Length: 295
Image 1 (cartoon, rainbow, N blue to C red):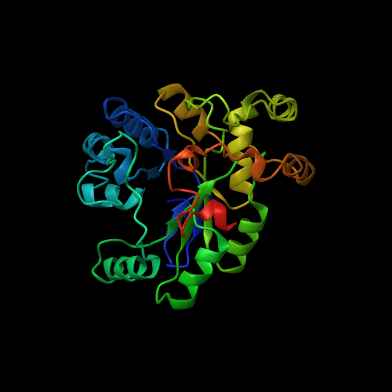
Image 2: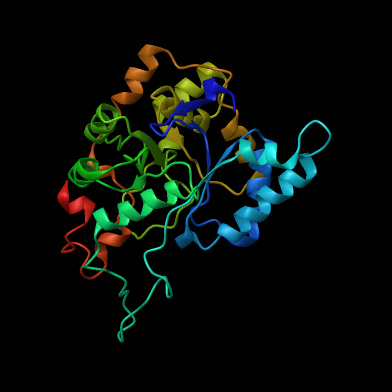
């Protein structure tokens, strides 16, 4: 991995600043998308057990390794180039159980983040993973982990885009040597949202379009480059080969300090959070570990 395209984690490992997000990517499409991303120079793939596409992601990686290996590059060396992120499952059997009325019923009120973290530390000890982190945690939850962690969280993955930049959380993570990953950095333009959900229109924003025209790039490239220059990992999601290639081509230009400051000024705060679908489910707001209610 090229060091200028990576950030160093507290675990000592290098994490690519650009990754391919695989949330809501159908297995039938994600295999080709992963292969296209690796062909385009991506070396970071983000998935999760709950996305139900881990097997398809693995097939894409395997296909890329098989066609790329040769006398100069062995299979093991190619595998070492790829940084794979996944998230653990909340349940051993039914991922999305429902009650007798057909409503989601997968809330575990007995969840113990401390006990779970200690088990994750064991995975590092056993060599099953190289780095461990969290997703959608708030500062209060992170403080509890940091107080007991033998191996501190290396990464925190949350929703972040220009109108919802999570500046206080960024500051907390920076002070505690936790690298942040932004999911939805483009505003998730292809995601199906309920009618009352906030829908960022970042790809058509006038300021973003002006900067894109100035640098002769796309608005998506400006949005991704902003996070990379803030040392925040960005994982835009796409299964379109052309868009994957363009989104990955963000290393040939740089935003000026004034341009970065202007984009920082687009932040509007929590009112622009768009990933709110869980909040409407019965019992979520009352759950003791609901990160949004604790902020």
